[in-house]
Length: 270
Image 1 (tube, rainbow, N blue to C red):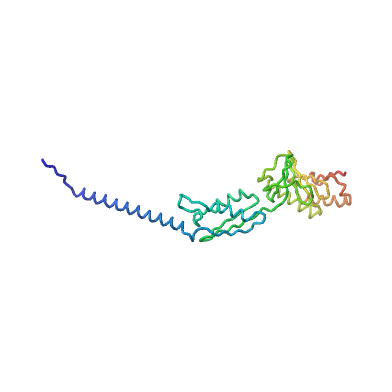
Image 2 (image 1 turned 120 degrees about the vertical axis):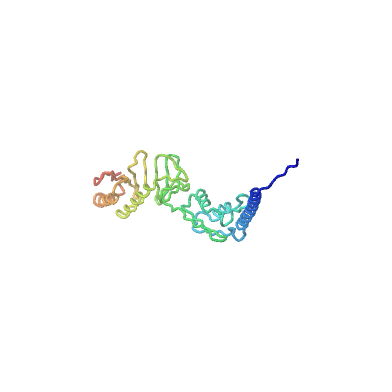
């Protein structure tokens, strides 16, 4: 007995539906391939590859060293076919982060892309403020006005360079070795002292366990004992009166002046 398969209208519709889906799928794949190929072509387009680097703001850091670092980030590819040198793929933020880590003398660096093939690099180097030394290791470093120690420094033996000594701990380079707020106090005290008494600070001295005070040695040779949170305006005015009325020409014989007790001043002569 011969068997026959009968095709109903529904089965014909399903066949048509399946055929259309297959066609759309193929077209979608082709379109996706075209889009991906177009994107790859544009990303590899020679005119849109970074070939020019402009650098400014460098003084002690060699611009050639910075350019070498950037060139390293421009080499190679992502996903084998996408060049890192493409204007659209170059990661300026990541490059900035690497440079700041490798060159602690730089306070900031800004890398801007300029279409179609250029980047400009603008740097700001740290402003030297003082030499910082700590502990008994004899190690010192250059510090900027934020208290960040960025480079090894020789021990300062003269009086022309401001020095900060801490008798405990060690000097880590690079690191935020001095609290920024404390450095701001040092700067303020030094400026007020100069304006009121014409004395200049040669060095600041910090002692372990005495976190509420500091000592300042002036170029005349004597020490000043000062509370960190005191009113420096009042303190320097009081010192001015003391030096003018009490000491006069005998300043060179002073060993220290203790300014930690308000309007009362204690001092010692050599």
